[in-house]
Length: 482
Image (cartoon, rainbow, N blue to C red; front, side):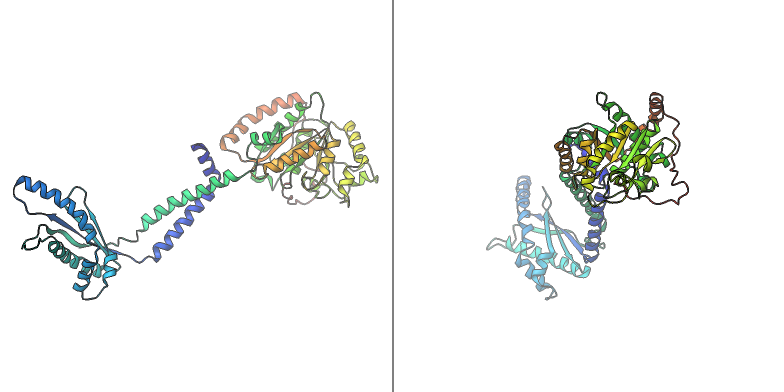
């Protein structure tokens, strides 16, 4: 993965990255609020040795630098801690004093910087003053040779003890900044891990590879699709409508040697958008001037009649059981010549009904009457209806949903079609996220491309399609795309 991949993941999962930062900052706020303030008293010791002459001064300086490193450890010794505790007359224990002292030798100098921290500023200052006296006394005692009166090392306090009026801990700004940075990294890490473990279809190349068939269309995600699933009713000029017109053109040229007159639209699992794809494809093909019949063969979960505002009580099942004919129950929709055969009542044996000889004979008759028959079939993996229908049709179109359909399910669906010797025409990747650049290209080139298609396909002017049955009916919210 390169930087562009990380940026793409961060843009796609921005809410996860921000959630990680928010959780981390919230945790830092709780910790900061519950941490008692700590005050520090600092002092600096100057370590020197008596010397005569330049040479002795140089040697003494080197000696002092070496000793300073040992004195840093001496500040946390038990002997010094007990001396300070005795000086304070038992106000604080020696163990607590030892834990509150920290020392650091300034590199390449003879300076030793010592810090005393405590939640009480007064106590921190008292320990600091006592430490400055007791440390000097302890070092000079240890550095006095036996029988000598003067120590070999002298200790002087050159700064402090000075009490910092502002608490050294906690530091809210630093805590929040570090927490935010760590939270962003953690959120990005989770997003990257989720992206790496995600096996759903997320590109046209992946879909083409796992199915082994061409991708004939890429339908962009449209937030308004749930309110108005049909592109020619409220959004005829949208990028989704233009993508469906491209799908229409690709289908027209895919079967030059073996023209496609009956096509099954299916998917691997439910909620992939196959029904809206079937309805919109039939609508845009009919808008080009061709005779089109849309058949709702999903007898288990009928939805096309709801999308189109048509009567769905009588339809395909009635035709298959011989109660009526397709020409009698097919309903017109819109001025472009589209006719719709609803599903009818729900039978107890949908698989046997769509796989019957009557269904095969019906498709043969519809091939002669219409230039294109679009069949909305059930998903392939839960039931066998779509595979049976595809075997009797001229071909099948497999719909997969971007970022949701697992690759293994798409592969299994394609294998189910090949198992019955059905002709897999290609795939459609549905609900693809659209960037601003993609939207601009669609809007810029859509009118010109559609003008060329209209001249080539003899279409009448495309006007908003309104069902004759739904013209006087109250508006209903369509079901979720399937």
